[in-house]
Length: 394
Image (cartoon, rainbow, N blue to C red):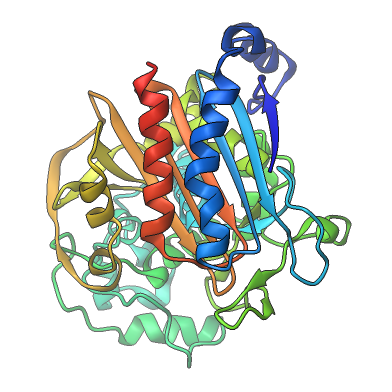
């Protein structure tokens, strides 16, 4: 295992913003006793996962009071044997949806669209169709009325995507049912691109990533960064990377590093350090819109009152929540958490698994990136133990 400490999170843009962050974040000396204690709990909870689930490599990043710690295990590829580092690129799967949510929130902040709008406002072929009864907010919270988990395999291009949504038949009225769905948030991302008069991937790579201070995150990995891109490994242990598809960028297409992802978590913990419009955009993703059991669904992020038991966190991230329709109760008005709240999101592709969680009022967070899609309960159990340790010292 390699361990690194990083004490200053330059996730804002502009010299003044960076100066303000440097003034506000603690120095390494103020947390001199933290690394060994944190390293012990991270090592105890994450190292066994490599052998237990045949995971080639894992990168873990932790933030506490603005100080970042990095822990690297294993290799970026079984074939190449290069060690995982805090700058290894991993596919983050559905954690990408939180960037789609941030872009949509940013478009609303800029006045380019409203989450109360309907798809047909931006895509005339959808006007008057069943999907047009849903709002953009419904798309972003998986409450449009029963869109499926995956886009059907027969839908392979933009024209077929439009036809699919024209013909789609809901199973519930908008806002009554949450059904986790790539087509749902994918359509939101696509419409946001139209509203901002740009391509979705371009907008995320040129506005959202830089606005959050993320310097090594991509939807389309450039040639210069391919050497940092880990190989995922499928169930048979064979090397694999994500396949292209309709709404792949919007739903599961981001590749990022432990360094950037803990910076993203830090931006969510301390959005006041961002430029004003980006601050408001990030804060917009923290609003809760629907209650589903113990979980509150916002844009991208899922919320729970903190502290939370492991059983409740596992239930909120269970296959039942991901694969089946669940009754949704609208929050009227929508809620910004008043007390300690845990935000989290899982992510997977065929060869990668990821998890991110943070508690803004406790100023703690964790990111885990792996080049194998191993069980979500194992990821959450390990991360929960680390967060419990960090919280116990607050």
